[in-house]
Image (tube, rainbow over all chains, first blue to last red; front, side):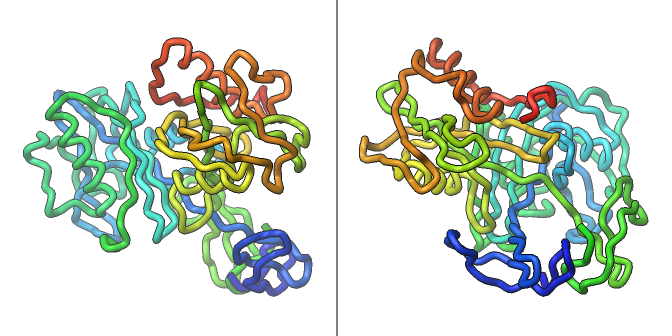
Length: 180
Length: 180
């Protein structure tokens, strides 16, 4: 950040009065520009015990598999976001959304919130951001071709929990050693 | 937003190519300035069945009661944020953090994530942002003096769940009719 988005003045990286950490502060209008993590919402779409995965048509990790997920937009709830992303990436409808996992990626300032959800029917097909979408039995998940560590971790939670048919809410920090 | 924080150029409110919603786009360097909801993390600190509440020393809602909560900062996990806010507002230590509720406030672009947590000891006292901190039996919660609808809803979840000693993960959208 170089300039104030309110007045166009130059910003400085400094600790504002009464605060304990550095922020961008405008030297002209003195406004403090707070920066905060972004939230990603996603879903593990499930039908007859199988999971719907999408093969990415876009970078990064084009050609790798993922679950539907994307940035939370202003004005929508976390659940609405997970439904929207599933529609955009797999043209698929979800129902029975169950909160399942919170995954922190502190080194890139992202928080993932993942639902388990019921895939309503087989009328799905690739959206613009997907090359293909396909149902996988848990034993067929292409572990070596999963796009991101955070998605692999969410799928590992699901894989292990479905073996015991118990799905407690899961929470984890993705270690920086798994940096992309 | 009036200016690009990268190059200082003017921004326009427009739908970028390939997108489906309005964004601020710089007319000089063409960068898209995405805006996303902010996350708030908090905790319901519990000791011997009682809940620790803080009376706000700052606006808005100075003098009203709340649980420790605040904006998630870059570089920290949601759980770390809830612990930090509890330390800042009540100088209190938490343990056994249990994910409990997700509350969407879509009309102000905020998402609250609330833990249940064990208050480690009675060595708590008001931080800079609190006038006082006090343990309340659930039947003594000052419902008419709770600072925000989202906090009242989290406390209602807890109040009802503690009656049955069952605490499933709770999720809700705060209706715009409860706008501050």
